[in-house]
Image (cartoon, rainbow, N blue to C red; front, side, top):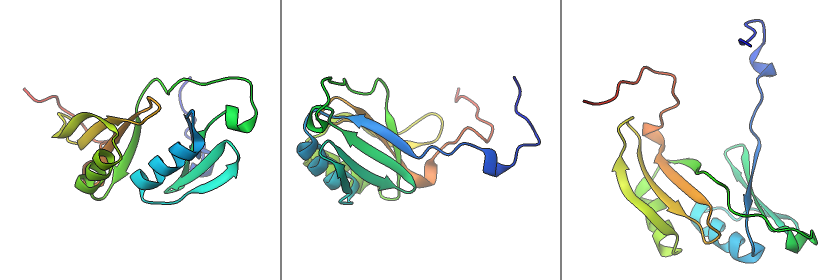
Length: 142
């Protein structure tokens, strides 16, 4: 099915929340508050929300919310665009995130680093000035 050209931008879905499964909400709150540089808000005993420029990063610990199930880490990376990549890297290192790659210029033009949080969730931080949104033509380097 092809997109309907009559749809307005108001009809375009907006991604407003992403769940990050954690097993210790207090530890997750400290980790993400330090990593993101914002305190966030405790919403329930097992949910802590961080407003990342209009999209909520929701740390969710099911057991702390009295649910009778556990969740494993997200299967793929969450991507964050930041204005100071070196500072984000330093915070991740200081917080003992598992660094999966150093800051590197990627073939598609982004400068980024990959890491894993203490709960196994994979993260990528990208220099905001190099974010590739797939809109401009991209040619693989030779």
